[in-house]
Length: 148
Image (cartoon, rainbow, N blue to C red; front, top):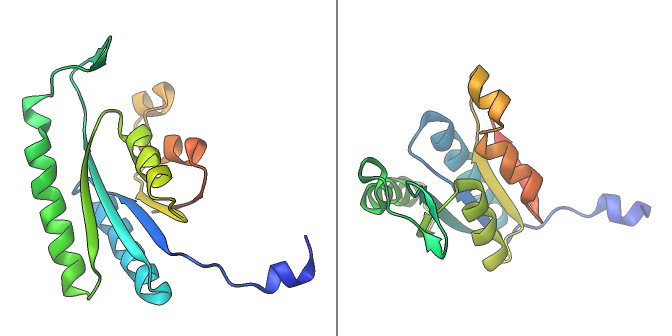
């Protein structure tokens, strides 16, 4: 890497945040807000509803306990919080596997950064590889900030 490249500061124009109204997600949202203010970046927040089962030609029925309406409400709280910090946000409900949808949205918006929260996975989550933040990190084509 050339020395002048190392001196260049990162530029973030679009930041995608995965949000699910949990404590780690709130920490991630706060960190994304700090970065957005520092870099005058656009924030795109997504909350993803999971289908009950994948269907052959698309998404199967949605879990009534995890409906898109619930995710719209979560995004409303996130948007209100960001507004109190002076950060404007675009919000988008996703439907599908969360990590895949977060990465899809980041690709769609040509995001420079994805910010997600994480918590300590339990044994089953670790064995089955169910960590959304780890899956985002593996699949993303841009920088990923995992907030602990």
